[in-house]
Image (tube, rainbow, N blue to C red; front, side, top):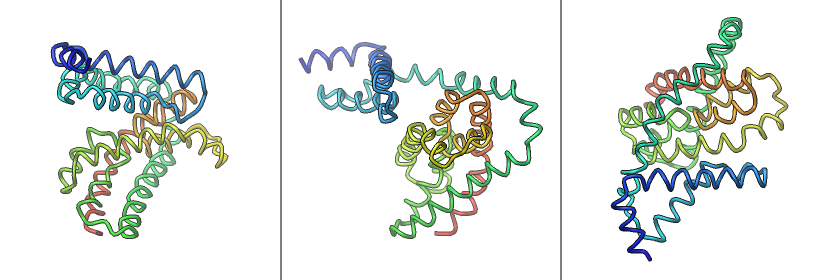
Length: 234
């Protein structure tokens, strides 16, 4: 059985695409059925794919070769985030200062928390700079980690975990902290958990989604500048 699956994975160009979409739909089914944040479709998909690759001893390269086609959709999907922002551009102009201050506060809080935790847990400089880009989108985070001398693979893992965790708990945190202003919700989610969080923000409302989408880009640029300063602190 293992040999059959391995041969299929190695010879089928779209094996990665099929298994990714199938496991994601399975995650969506669990989320809709149980209504629990823990059944995040992305988390479920990642877990299921790992299990399949381990059980059937499939080479991760065979999976990646097919799954890479999904990555081509990342750019147009990211660009689409500009649509709700364009529709709310007047709202953006009206609250420009508050929005920028809010995003900067989130970026600074992330950097300070990483610094304090690195000190508390005795992490070395390499581990410290590896975690600094945890809250920004992968494209920017990878380059920043390389520039600072971090471990890129761990940076990617930290970014994925941060994004999915934000997606899972964003709504709960907003309710618990009684955050009711849509702009504040969107900024907080987008700044702390990039695109994965933004998908949750868009579910919460148009304003939340627009502000969260804006925060991804602005927070990414701010994080680059802040990280270049904080990299010398530990």
